[in-house]
Image (cartoon, rainbow, N blue to C red):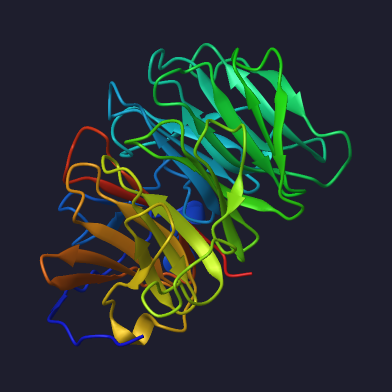
Length: 349
């Protein structure tokens, strides 16, 4: 692949601890960062109270209420769930008894209904809340210890239809908000991401174990491997490296973007062919663990390489250094405000 040298818009942000006392000080700053200028700059938003902070928490998932963007939920590795009702200026704990909370999903048709996936007493589980997290019920559980629910997505046209993927390779679905489940596919290896094509809601993509993407174009009836699709070797190129992250266009059918340890790659035709995006050359070779497309501007991409965040601005990149000792694991755009972007940070394993 050839990469074109592009103009760089460099932005430096100096980060101070989330709180003046307690867990929010110094180089431990992790937790949640927020941008109000479309990803050009970020600052930590971790205050719980005068003594407590999210700055030492590993944030694995972020969900923003689509009807009230002041309401933000975060899921952590060991510290359960937190909610903010003031746009991340402050946080309150929610008790779900989950750990390794890989996903929090809000039902857009009834935003008091939440789904959270993680480990419950050593077993992968999906919990549902009908009252914005005040109470929870377990609607799915893995049969053995150790297997987690590693991916989850809700249908954009039916809030009762939820898809899950597990670290054991299972892809399953409920059509009735968790009352019953049906098996769709067994990928044999961990399903690390599930996404629904926003322009074609019958199309589901699953990122499998850093190696492959499997897709269904018929709402889960059949699946095919994107890696194994027949291609013209002379004209149809393929992504390179280990798959670490994936996003899809918020409005255009068939557009998939993946982050690997060899760069960022895009397909405009459901994974048939791929092109390398002209990223900053120094990020090539670093695993891209988080990537997202701005739902308000389909031409704007945000990706994270280790501790830096790159936001496309026309033909340039704005670069933000988090100055944290943690990596960016989650990028989440605000569904209402085009200028607001959140990051979730976690420790390097």
